[in-house]
Length: 455
Ligand code: PLP
Image (cartoon, rainbow, N blue to C red; front, side, top):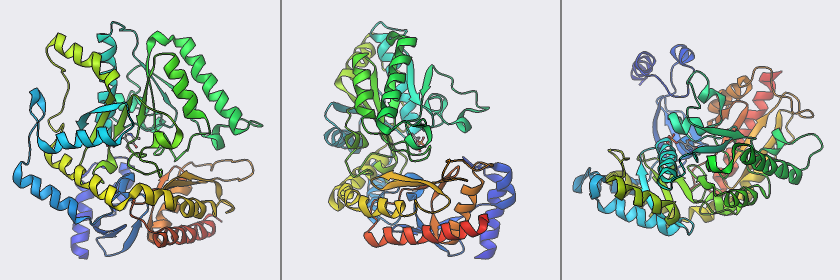
């Protein structure tokens, strides 16, 4: 095993360019090779066990050994392994999935466009919205509003919507017209003396001011994750989304909910927008749609969004956008089975029921000397590590403490995501009370050792 492991690691260090990785450090330190998974756990190639506290990349709702998904893929591969959906071609799983998504997403959403990744889905949304506004004879209405610290992907358009410097710097992004507004995270961006309600009012006033400054006739859409996840797990302040929706409606600005992480029950409601009380015109879905067993994403749109796009395609002769894998029969068959399991096992109900112990478990660390804030909603949360609790002062070298915590966490058998110095948890949707307790025990041991290591 060791020889295999060594040769695997050496081959990886020599031949793979890893996403989201310090590449020179990787050449020195090599990979953590994950060899197998079962339930909420994975094992590395040396046989060490870990709880996957981030469900892979916030995505493996079903856990790592759901045989029904493998069987659905196998059966579909034998029947029809591939077909496309260009030029009115169709296949049964993708039709059934579009129908199912129209049924389970909030009311105005009736139609699905499929891609393989969340980034492609958000790029598609940018292009659809532009196409639609050109069709409506308002070619100036093109700018997107997004938020600092948002994550919407990394392709040229979706990466432009993302509001994280590391995804922009030296990539020449943003490359599309976008304005990033203040991140709605009260702990970090609330002003001295401001309460949460005043913070919400300030954010909404900023939105109105930006619309007034740019001109509503130049702003096409507002895109946001209901709860900002990959930027650091930041639930919105009370009243924020109702206000954003009201202002968007008043200015004929489309509202896009990027539900790539919040969708399919993560927050204890079917979709994140329902947790926070708003209704989008467009929704991005991915990750938990197949529990990441297959790459798949969907853009859901309302009839109001669809109408002008369809009219224009008739005028031009074709809606000139689509991917080889749009509506892939194997990916959509796996999604259908995954959503059937989600309903049978009531993942949304499980998240709603476990929200209290999960969030209480996290908040029990709020008194720890290194923890500035413990936060989250549903089955997603984070601990923000700080150098000084009283002043919320971050560490001098951002990310170093997070990396150390992550290494200790691995040693303790808990995988979480260190986003800078924020430790994010987002376990598979199949977790039980006992699993939540074990995650918190391992996190507690990690923090204890971190305190010693930081001295
Ligand atoms: N949107 C959100 C909210 C995400 O969290 C992500 C990925 O984490 C994406 C979009 C991009 O998805 P992908 O990595 O599949 O391109």
